[in-house]
Image (tube, rainbow, N blue to C red; front, side, top):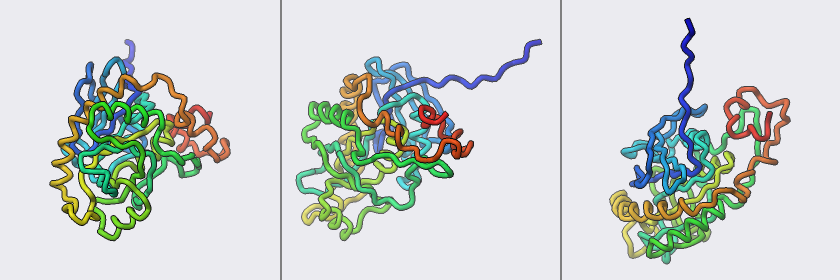
Length: 297
């Protein structure tokens, strides 16, 4: 009698990932939808991932905070989220996030496609590497320029006020800024402040995934003299007004993203792994095989 052979079901594939922020827990327009749970060496992702097609492109959607907004920014399983998307074949990630404005001209309900980051987090794991395997990845330009340009072009067709460029301060949270901190970040010339772009952008770069953000301005943080300081009610109200806009931007952007990649994101690890190949621990090789297989045999 032949023995039954256990096989791991093949996961669906997608080349474009979308990480939805507060208020964006689903993505309309996907066809052939499958809901998959992906196991990773870094634990469970925030939620199951919805995989389908949009305009013939494979898309994977992940709600950052879990459906029902169950996970705090400081508790997000970002390693698992990025690794899970990578395992589905994702090469580009579009992130949607709520931010506060640090500049008068960036008004609530405006959209920003930032090009720089300042890391003010302090309790988050921000690298896949360590435990005997060292890599130093270039991160001077944290957002993919090709993906940024596509997002800005299509966002400008949909939204009233869209700003290209700007520095995004990523704070730890979950509390909002003190007034002194808000004035400090303004003195640095920063544009917006939020809680989620890091370590997402860093881990995406280590995974050789292009990453860009649609930042939805919901408030003026707490620096503004004539506007109310940020509250949860303010954020939710303004964010919900931007959800439909964000969905329309995604629907227009995904079909025009180039099929092939020529940006540096695609080869970020090429010269970054410093550890001698014969000294890399077997466990590190196993856990990071998906990321390093092109460079480490």
